[in-house]
Each structure stands twice: as C-alpha cells, then as structure tokens.
Image (tube, rainbow, N blue to C red):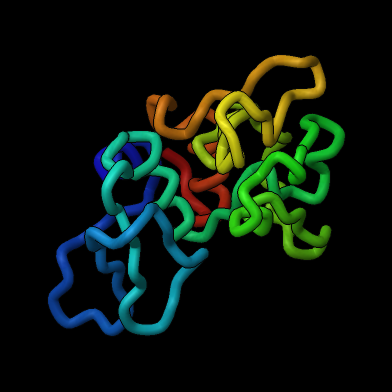
Length: 162
C-alpha cells in the first residue's frame, strides 16, 4: 500500500463505516477482482504472495487495472504460448477486446501488471510469454513495485497528478 500511496494519489484508509471496501485475507493464492466492487472486495494474499511486486499487482487489480499482457495490442510486443500454460490458467492470458482496454500509456515491459515468461507454465522451463525481441519477462514477484508507466496510469485513471 505504501508503494502505491507514495507514488500516486490513491489512498488506502482503515475502514470505519464505508459501504465499499477492500478486505485483505490469507486465501489460497494471490487474486483480486478488477476495480471497485459493491461492499467487500476480497484481495487474497495467501502463501507465496507476500512479495512486494505480487502485493502491488493484486492491489492494482483492486483499483481497476487488468494485466498488461491482456491488452488488445499485446501481440505487437509479446508472444504468448498458451499451449505451455497449465490448463486451469489459460484464462490468465486472454486478450481484452479493444473497447475493454485502458491504454493510458504505451505497452510497458516493466509493468507490475505484466507476468513473467514462466508464469503458470505447466512444466519447469516452459515459456508462457516472451518479448518480441526474445528477452525474458521478469516474474511479478521479482519486480520492485510500480513501474514509471504504472504510476502514470494510476494517476491518469484517478485524474490526479503527483
């Protein structure tokens, strides 16, 4: 939360009487719905999720962001190999329709919302994504937090400047 608050205008406050709120719990996995939900919005930070990049990733889902690799223009920048993904994770690589996008900045290879090259691979060493130039993508848990473009996007979405 500190990473997001220190670089953007988004603030997380302790809940008092707010009707809509985020509730963080230790579930089975790392996940959040995308964008504001009515009443409680669960954000799961279970076993293996307590890395800065992973926590920031899930909180950005909660404030309204899709995966970078889901953008409708992603095929210009990356190759996606769904045949190498675990069967129950193929949906993690679905591409958005152009009208669903929030293309507030160009595609960002450093975004905390972009999975790494081996994310959800069905076997060790298999690639699920690769940059068009052949370079590997950093895994979310290895990312230090928000990229410069992530900061710009959050501030644009929330109409603020910081």
